[in-house]
Image 1: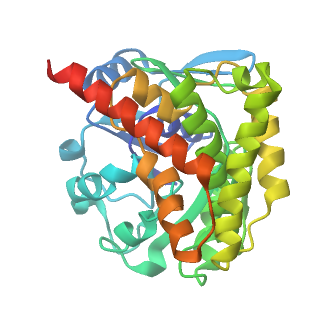
Image 2: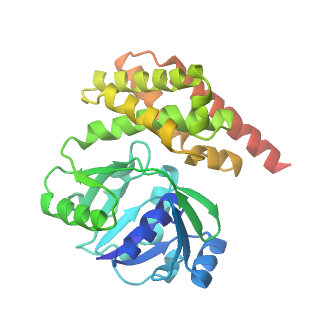
Length: 311
């Protein structure tokens, strides 16, 4: 399959590297020039459990340098950059191009549908971990999975074809018509782990050092799932709690994207994760004190970083 990955950060590079290893024609699209240059020079250095290698049959380029419309576009940009990023590759979006978002948070489908037909949009969630350790180098430790479907609930054949491609790379993808529940479960997962790691500086596994921090993560998840349920989405707390505890146990040394952004003094996705939950909670009158407090703390850290950067 001809595959382009929009947003070649940790997740985008890891997915692209594994798909290239599986024999697909993969182009990574990003504006991080040192990362692109390193891949061009030495291939993508990909480290997974027990194995480190360079993936060389992969193209890494800037948006304006791409020309061929892919069969599949994987979107891994931060939610707040989706519209700008898609605007930069509008020329690649052919009538037959399927677009799959595995991004964090809520609201991404609505943006993508401004660029391609709703029947071409796929939506899903993934629990795969990944870290960008250096320009051209990505690590991923522990297992993950993908749940996805057509955003309009109709394009089963397209969803199956994309799932087959992802599974050929060992990415454990399942077509799931109940994907909105999975999306809310992932929002709960990220609202707990991303924000806690962002404010504490801990890697995911370090949250297991204290029982209190584990329980706080589970409390945040319970708040988010309560909002989902009150909004008519049948998300399951047991699934989300199990995923959180599994990540704390197995995702050794993993720095979630929100912590990576804090350390790099970038804006985070707090508004499309904790922030959007707080707004939704207000609509259905569900209290979310832990989720809201973490959102306020991450905003404070962003403000501090912005203030320090401006001096």
